Length: 295
Image 1 (cartoon, rainbow, N blue to C red):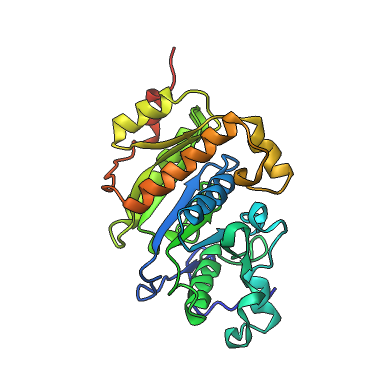
Image 2: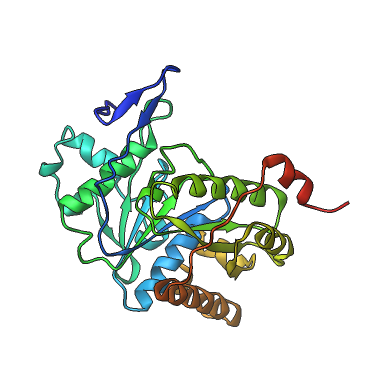
């Protein structure tokens, strides 16, 4: 894949880094970027949160920022075509693309876009995210959107995959109640803190996922100035929903499922209403190592 690098600059190490255009903005939509340790359930959280917003009557756009392009498959029931593949097909002449070439309508009307990415080692994912936002603006798809959710790859905090923070108003961090997840969360908080010096993004809150308890998460939050805004326990219905390629709002009703659905609806309503940003201060790695756990 031959990806243009006109928005990239060479560094002494030979790597390529993206220079983000500060004039590019999404508009009036409320924008959330979802981060967290790899495998923690960001796509599950993002997709069900998108549905929850749509159930509240909001027009929702979810943007998957992972080269695996699997963020939205529970919404669309398939692996949607990626922006980078669509652009490659027209030799990167974006004016030749139609909306249906890169946007798929998912469950309950959620618009789904998969940014995709360059082959491993050949380019920066931040370039793809930037091109995706530019393409959506060119086709006026952001003008009638109420909520945009970026589902961001793993806990990578390089300039490229931190690029959604340029557009987001609030960053949400998904974590479990364990050492590795909280350690990754601390690094993500540091990345958001760095981006907040130049952009308006702030930490919106922490979502505890796949955890029966939240004691370690809550202890860390209190120490650094974060707040838990939702808690989703480790339920088998979540695993089954992924295998059925469905959101939790499409599964067979049960009391435990209704509780999870209500938690998503409550979270969506809270995020839409808005709340004060969290000015969290991350710990140094060694300090966090000593802080976490018990003897």
